Image (cartoon, rainbow, N blue to C red):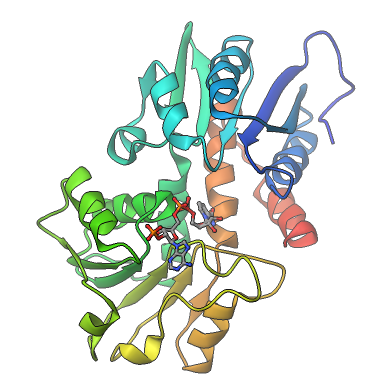
Length: 281
Ligand code: NAP
């Protein structure tokens, strides 16, 4: 879908990743471009990391821009000339464009995560105690968002504890985050929020990253993974009576923040949300 008929002035935007065929970004941004009647197209391009670097710079300097997804977010952070604070802190870039001859990068996953937390927990996480499952790119964005919002304490549980330690060290979060040495460390602990940021849950046969039964009281649960149906982890939380949401709100809000970087306000949220609900999974 394009905002207007393609012309010699049409700007090219794309999501770069591998794999990328499952991405919902073209549907979300296509709906937003059409709603604003902008002269731009948004495509999904599967590419290797060397090509991703060239595409980030080439698309941006040709007057377009785009998004970057797994596994190229780190390479993209190195490829841009100017980095927002979110890119500096996470070492990952998911949104790029150019301004005044310089290629800019942002990591709108951080803003998307913060918005998704607010939708689930309107009182926010200031002073809260949070359990974060995972230590990859999504967990990195989540930790940055939690720190921005004044979280009191974050316990990180990851399959490889060394990666959790490295995440904490890399983000200078030693004052408020600790790495848990295995599930046993949970034993009855209370958390205001549990964030599922591993890649488990994309496939129906995936195991749960851990059981909430290992915790004591849990205020709310947020899964960063999403699918057509509520994820297994979201269902497990709800069965325990814990309010839970999957990653669709974060996806929508990171896309909205990226669109704002490229085209400014207004962001056609209703159209983007409708496209997500039509195409989710
Ligand atoms: P990543 O960097 O590859 O990290 C994967 C994480 O999952 C690591 O913590 C890894 O643990 C853990 N993991 C993988 N397989 C596991 C297994 N069999 N058992 C236990 N742990 C396992 O991936 P990512 O970029 O963080 O993405 C994670 C998920 O978040 C993806 O599904 C992605 O779609 C989702 N996400 C959603 C949004 C959104 O907008 N909703 C945005 C970004 C990402 P190890 O460190 O031990 O390998």
